[in-house]
Amino acid sequence: MTSSVKQGTIVFRHYRNRSGVDEVTESFSSLNELFELCLQSENPKLVDRVHIEGIAGDGNKHTLTLVFQSVTIEKNV
Image 1 (cartoon, rainbow, N blue to C red):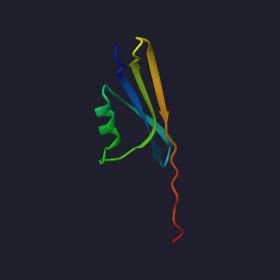
Image 2 (cartoon, rainbow, N blue to C red):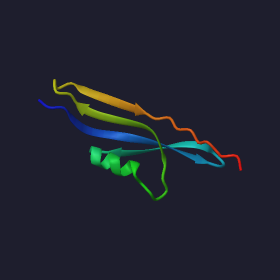
Image 3 (spheres, helix red, strand yellow):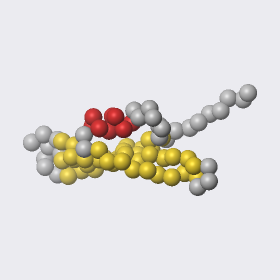
């Protein structure tokens, strides 16, 4: 049996002036859909976590979580 991805969730972080940081989730069913979600050019969001659910070659279910950290550095003007 080969390993396969069944579904996943991407968690975006979005800063709002009044409420602070909000999390927004979107689901995907293929790695191609995940790729497209990460490349959104209209109203881009900060990727915080990606949860990928699938079945390993031995038939067991697994969830893989990828966590990202980003930093914004402002130039002194």
